[in-house]
Amino acid sequence: MIGFLLDLLFPPKCACCGRVLERRKVNPCPACAEGLPLLSDDQILRTGPYGLCAVAFRYEGGVRDAIRACKFHGRQSALRALAPYLVQAASEHLSGQFDAVTYVPVSPKRLRERGYDQARLLADAMARHWDTRVETTLRKARHTKAQSSLKDAAARRQNISGAYTVLSAERAAGRRFLLVDDVVTTGSTMAAAAEALRSAGAVSVVCAALAAPDLGGEPEESRRPMGEILKTNRELQLFSCKIK
Image 1 (cartoon, rainbow, N blue to C red):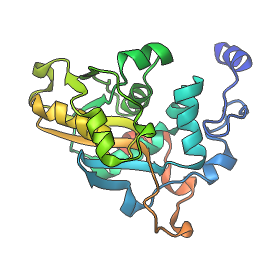
Image 2 (image 1 turned 135 degrees about the horizontal axis):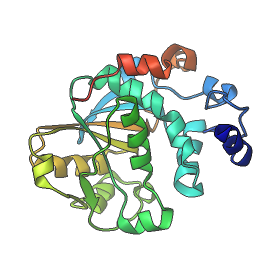
Image 3 (image 1 turned 90 degrees about the vertical axis):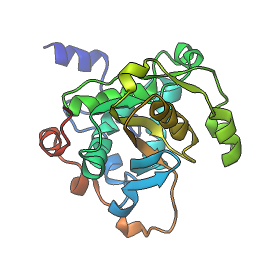
């Protein structure tokens, strides 16, 4: 009864197009799910200044719309609906390489403006699939320009350099972290956050991002439809790496 009333007052919407979903329908809606810009197997795992990173989607189309809807229009459910795709990417490619889940935080100023942290939302949704909790290990010590406003990689690195500090070195030392963010572009932000953890004594840091810009060169037919990659929540729990 409570679920019915909530659906009536706050009808669930598609993560990508924002249309109202029929009750208990899968999110994203079938039309958007069919066109999701999933990365092919050989592009999910990439390396950069951050180390290893598993990425689920190209930053385009409905996925870009979902991320922007969460960041700028308060639609927090949009990222939660796409989190299972990143759970599977991280499980398949980073299994056994981490025992704690954390995230790249926004600045206190951005958190006050937005009211929530989109990377934390994504990490929370992922951690629930592994029956664990997200750990807040980092703080963004200073507000920076939006990385998206800087097109040059060197400018992005300079903008974010030294921006992250570890809240407790004792809680970071000797740990293996999965570091989560919504988008990775040049990797400067992820690298700065990962370096802060490593400098505090983390044994290793691997990363996961919901989306990244198109690398180019991949034929259209190599994109996999939703049904070939997304398992049910139960299957994801059985398949994914165990957090000890």
